[in-house]
Image (cartoon, rainbow, N blue to C red):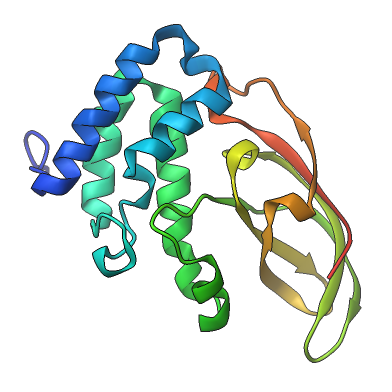
Length: 193
């Protein structure tokens, strides 16, 4: 059964979404500038939608994110995509060790997700992995602080590593599918431990 209309957002989330939509409208054609668009999203606090309130986020649920991105998408497709990327990827941090979660935990974690890369596991021991690889067309990477990398290796299987964005090389892509404001980048690791 389908719901008619959009579910009402809790007040805190509704206000953040409305403020973001107003800011996006004011940004106008500059929404195509990935850095400016990311700044507006970061300033709104909306990318912390799924982060618990105790950690400084908005404490929303997945259904809230869907409703909010639907509303934001009316103002900017790029903003809706980027908001979903950052908010959803931040929620994926729950699969990481507690020590990693504590290091990254902020009210507005900007985490890009890099899957299906061309990776090579260079060296592995019980407590570390050294990897080289390339991940193509990663949305939100331009302004991400962290990247959750999926490392595919024939021997070790699929591994996940959360690394500082600054530790990776990159090549910017001006746009993909007409969404210039998303900030797509190709990312590269070279003997990253």
